[in-house]
Image (cartoon, rainbow, N blue to C red; front, side, top):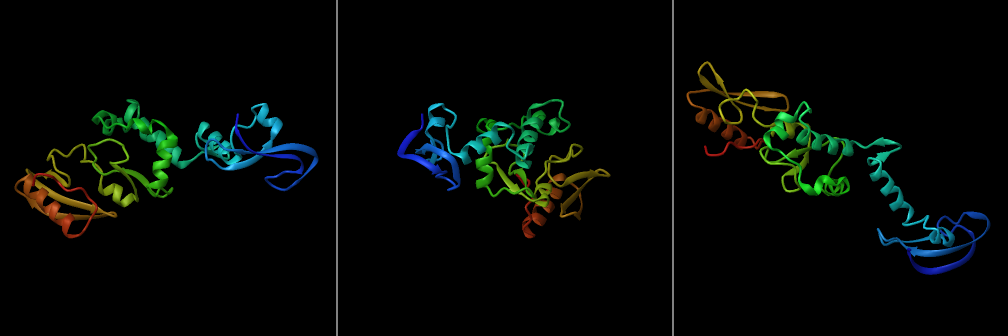
Length: 220
């Protein structure tokens, strides 16, 4: 049973809204066990266990229980959470080969949507941003994830499936190696090189000199 802060006695107005009631009812002031706020409730509803928390927390709990819904529809963030987990765990997902197939996983604490949402809110989430892994070879976790716009995420994508060079931004072309950086839809061709390492260095230099968000090739 909720903690009683004060017995408000018989009231002919709702203590929360000050709206008139048809009859007098016994009210009490209670402490919400979830958020700690004090709120008024009918004493009879408390005794019958019909009220277990304040109204705002009750609404929040119902939303999380039913898919973080707004007016019966799942939120964008909830759908993105579902998609993230599905591409890492469902072999039938069309993107599984790029995630679960590469042993990309979702951290245990994000099995709970409410925990993920709390992190997302603190990380500056809005519906125009997408979740991005800083290191594309590591999984989804608070330390490795951020919310970015579509340009930064496109810059941070993993190597193309057909890229056999082993380096980002480097592809084989006529037995030589082409360096290329794409940002905001603009392709920057950085020449053809005799070795993949030289092409990777050209890529790295361009990214660093222009302050781009692309990951750097390591070991160059």
